[in-house]
Length: 165
Image (cartoon, rainbow, N blue to C red):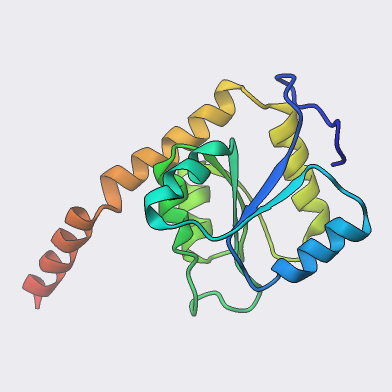
């Protein structure tokens, strides 16, 4: 999605990548080689400043590499869900975070490597920018976080399971 692409609500589409993931160098090179100027790379944010970058986006990416389901869980999901923003998940079917996103209808998901589906999901978000559908996706993710995934709820669940022994 090149510079000048407009979302349904009239805003120009931009992508911001925050931090230094394992494919950052490849992304930077791709953007440079293809002269894409609506992609921004922001360095790692201190925890105290993270609230600003998390709340700046309308939709957040949550990505994990293929083949690590059950081994690695993108903990960034919890911070993303806390912002009440919808999520574009590129995660393996059956992975913990993808199940959370799909069960709550908190975003759209596809498999890693399904580039056509990533594009389709991005187009959907662009075509529905500012809509109640997107707002409600984020709200459902936040509600699930508050009801089922806080520290107090998690500790209570562990205690209940331990007491069953």
